Amino acid sequence: MDRNKDLFEKSLRTIPGGVNSPVRAFGSVGGTPIFFKKARGSRLWDENDKEYIDYINSWGPMILGHAHPQVIQAVQSVAEDSLSFGAPTARELEMAETIVNLVPSIEQVRLVSSGTEATMSAIRVARGFTGRDTIVKFEGCYHGHADALLVKAGSGALTFGQPSSAGVPEDFAKHTLTLPYNDTDALVELFKKMGTHIACVIIEPVVGNMNLIIPHEEFLKTLRSLCSEHGSILIFDEVMTGFRVSLGGAQELFGILPDMTTLGKVIGGGLPVGAFGGRKDIMQKLAPIGPVYQAGTLSGNPVALAAGLATLRLIQKENFYEDLAKMTHALVKGLEDASKAFNHAFSARNVGGMFGLYFSDKAPDSFDEVMASDREKFKQFFHHMLDEGIYFGPSAFEAGFVSAAHTQEDIQTTLNAAQKAFKKL
Image (cartoon, rainbow, N blue to C red; front, top):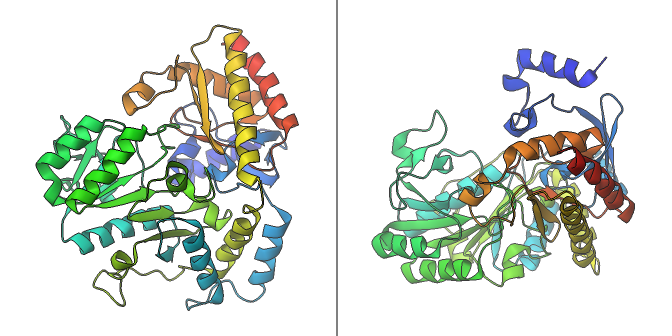
């Protein structure tokens, strides 16, 4: 009996689409979703007891690999005292001090329970601080499922956005403008016409939600300059890149400081934690000392913070990020080399422990270029690799992740599987 198929069929009866987050449904690649029951290090085991090398890492948080002994021990120790207090704890202060010490732009920070909460709250604070309504996002960037952020571009670069999800009122979406990623000219034009109305610009400084897209240097520098010139708040959504591409995030890597930053994933060590922070004068607008309201019963949950703090301590060891980047680069370089033997239009690249795979001649720089890649070939490649026990993200629009638990043997096993997969395409 196929336990995955049986569980999915049963889940469809009680869970919309059979899953609790859409990409898990394998809608982009077809087939039956995998139900997992155990993980250790770089490996996963599904309900059929099949073993996989994991390149999703719970979509980023498991930077140390699964079930790291010191993280598990920290969680178990704290859980014995209580699962939640709904009141201040010393761990909240320790986490706040750790974030402030490690992330260059953050002077004060508030903890929440998810990345969506973090981005939603950061935008509210930016609006409260500036007294403006309009926000700007970029095509292909995902910042959670808050109403104002589920917006696609209008018919032109300067038209107001339209809701990209049912249930989002047009009155909400009209305050959100969407621009092409890496298009400096469009950015300059927008600020020239509407700069005094823009409360904030939110951006993934390295995109992970339309596959991996790296920003052009001029694009980020111009964005920083325009926000400063027009008094708009620049928000780096580092929910994915924070503590993933370097210890200080993408802002440290590129040397560009935002006014606010959102965090998640790695800071929870696999448990639900989010955070948003920034300049002190902006963060002082938050209740209970300012007029911008935000609250959360489980914010700063002690068990989640125990996992996050244990993780943040371990990733500060010497050469951690250098070793992680080398391992990730070995994967993407090996995949590119394997594809050349069969003359496929294929490219790959990485930033730190994040990587992107594309069935195109060169790595894309924008949403349009991602859409022009051969997504049908990706589907076939994904399933060939899955059959070989290699678990990549089930979508051509998702970045992948390598953990510190991945070994050279894991990489070589993956490349051997890729040779077979490319041959079958």
